[in-house]
View: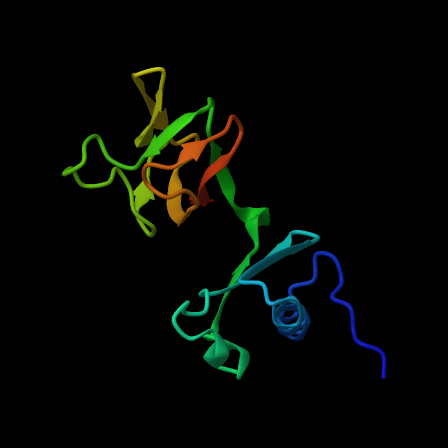
Length: 156
């Protein structure tokens, strides 16, 4: 029996489940902790926590942690990208609350993060109004020019 291939731009739950199963099988076969596949406008990432170092035999005997599956359909999402190389900060200071968190509504022009470049703090603004669907970068991480920082579900 031939395996069914998900169609590009298909959002059929059976196709998504089939793709997740295939990615999970590759994780097991190659003993990977993460794999990501893009198919049309669908992106599937399957992550598995690394097996504990104290018991490698337990990991080989089927004691692998359960995978985490992330399915994103960014076709309807707006992306806020980094305009420069630097360090990403979610807040104005170490003890300050983040500018935005997932689920927050933002207005066009609202500050969503800071990127430090050459000791200068550059405020990054939302280019569209909507709901923050996903924060794609961890606080304090280096970012590249054009790297996606946030996914925004635009207001209708």
